[in-house]
Image (tube, rainbow, N blue to C red):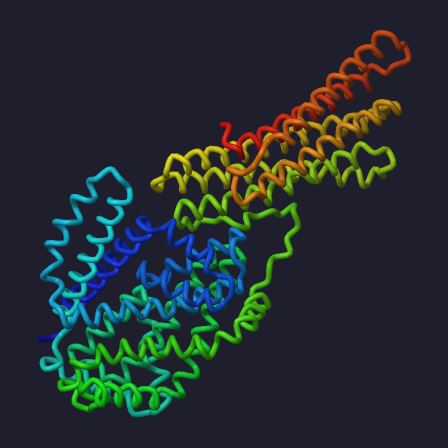
Length: 570
């Protein structure tokens, strides 16, 4: 049998089938047990050792180290776990992902599971029709499981048998006799393979399939598996390019951990492989996978490779876990947080990558909390603009700042809305739907606060240009109102910073809002009476004064609106 374009598409199509099955299965189990797994991640990360166990359990359940890494990065973004704790989880995820190799080796090659795949569709499809989301998610998992092993069965059939293509083995043998250089070459091959298929599990499945057909000898396949460990980190690095600084640092820790592990294992590879071969022949009575006759040894190679994969990742965790603080320091050192000023505000916690709805909403909450604090600074700029002691140069600077911040609030609302619109396309529980609407309302109120402060800046600019002055009472009252606005902002940002919106009380915010309204009424009455009774009272000053305290009271309205959205009053 000649290997041509048709055979190439047979293999790539089978790989695509396998990857799709893995994706459906992983997403199904995440939906079915997502909240429980997230609770595990949050509660079992008190130290790096528990983090390793957590990462292993989570990845073994979802059968995707990428899913575990995404959840971990999301928790770091949301401030729920530290970078040190996330490093332990990702180390455990590396061990957990080796379970996939064992499933493929034992079930995919020892059991004709493809024969059971079609009946699994009969079980999974009716479950997809059920309205209950959890049952539907388990149906997705079952169908994904069936597709995965159908893909593996097709892959086994698509890979040409070594007896028909002995030149393939001779070709590979030509690269296998250069010691450490040969190992490095096949590490590179494994890395490139994983980058091309964008899945370490799919690359592992292809490697195991080539071994089962006798095309790849044990030592060559082991070197390729090391490369696949690097390849999966490059995929994460590429994915993090559009992420925030936390995503980049988490990806960098994962990369350094795997690359350092591959470096020492490339040196120790001959000794480790001999050890695995010795254990398999003496303890389990299997054929030595290092045997030169590929046709004889090929039955034992998939099991031996799975054992090697687990051994490598387990030893790497043992060697590297003591260096987690160093890995974190290096990640922080190599991935700098941009020193952008608030005038160049960028979303820090949310981006284009949508994970599970719960985590995405947590990140959106963290973003509006951060932005609430940034928005509250506008009152300080307005106060400086009001201050007669400020020089014209500083006043112009404050005018520019308020104009810039107004643009930032506009952009923030648009980007937040776009993000939450993507989140809304995912299946949401009624509680999460309310939370999405609450956060959208919060973004809208912050944008309105920006608009009002911009209007205040234009009013004060007109005051400055026309050389209009306030009397002492007007200044005192405005400063008193500014103090209440600042107090309202403090309460608002504290409420936004709460981990659980359900536990927030609006009592303090309501009290401040009442005081703002009462002071506004007093200022309006005093201003009206002064215009009626005091002939020397400056009418232009009174009009600007009225605009200012009315606008500040509207800011107070939007501040209380934010807290009402936090507590779910939408």
